Length: 227
Image (cartoon, rainbow, N blue to C red; front, side, top):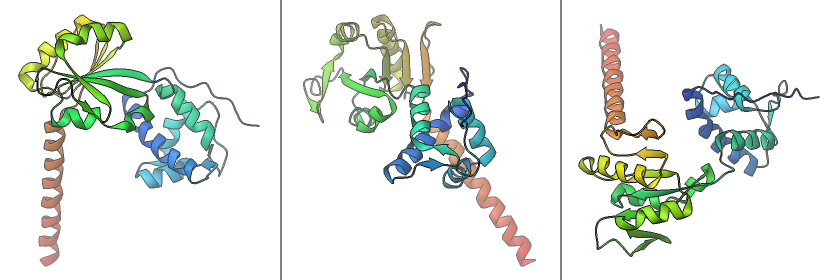
């Protein structure tokens, strides 16, 4: 008989960042007809440590894995669904329908992870009134009434850096409680408002640095081999 677990109420940030990876891969396994998955298999396909994967899943799974066979796919997906809130669709607004904003606004895959971007806002009069794959683009002055009428709590910022704080202030005034920020500036918000910054230049800098280090190490190895 399977041991019943109590999912942890507090999960490390690093674990939270990996749970969507597990969910995506396990969903593929379910579509292929697999009924169980082991932490070893997940680790192999996601290039992670099996012990780390096992600890991550133990924090969110309601049923302990079986020896050799691992976790039941359907139950594990349901547990991750429940823990991450994927089974409770949150609606969001997006401000700044430029190139990045359009990519996010029209990405239907967010719904799979519990997020539905219902509408975009922009100050450009040539964009307002248009639709992108069924998503309306509205003028900024309509944001407050829509947010409050629909009870929306999540806002996404994809505007130029010098406009981000003003947009953030407008969102907070409307009642937004969580902001996903794609501008490259830190935002000042009240204590009861959450902010997740996506710093693309910083990520690119880290990638470039690691690539340079790897190339330097490879060149050093080649020189040693030649000698």
